Amino acid sequence: MRIILSLSALATGLVAGTYYGFSIAVMPGLAAVDDRAFVTVMNQINTAIINPAFLVPFLAAVVLPIWALVRHRRARPAVLWILAGLALYLIGFVTTSAINVPLNDGLAAGTVTREQFEGPWVAWNLVRAVLSTAATACLVAAMVRSRSEKMD
Image (tube, rainbow, N blue to C red; front, side):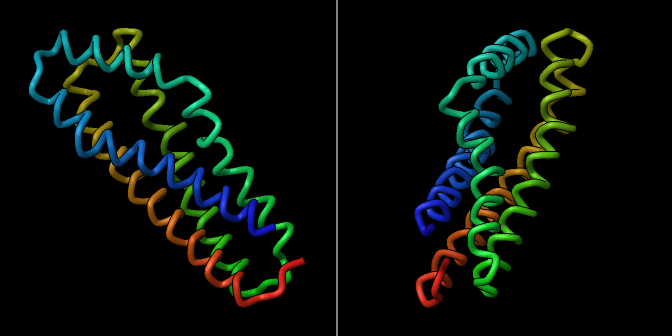
């Protein structure tokens, strides 16, 4: 079952890395372009990111920790780290679904301007980057704890 826990940490880390990349490179790079280029590129990015390379880890980072919780329910210290990691990731997942995606959709539909989009999107992306990074750290801590515990 350590494989499931390892895959949980990997999936969560991949998502954290995606958000981190947006925070340190993509959005600062787009900040320097005019409004038309910004909207065009963001819409292209938002279309391109809907692919298995992103969606599989994005969804697996929810499913795999739940599976790990069920399998490791008797491993008290490890299960607490798994639960913390899952909770942190789920907050970021909800943030994505409730804030970032609607902003993306509004930008694509032309109902949200760059001025309305950029500040909130960047701020909430940072929140989900921090949450998913912390979730990854918790899942790694669970892996470390599980090495000294007997797992079922």
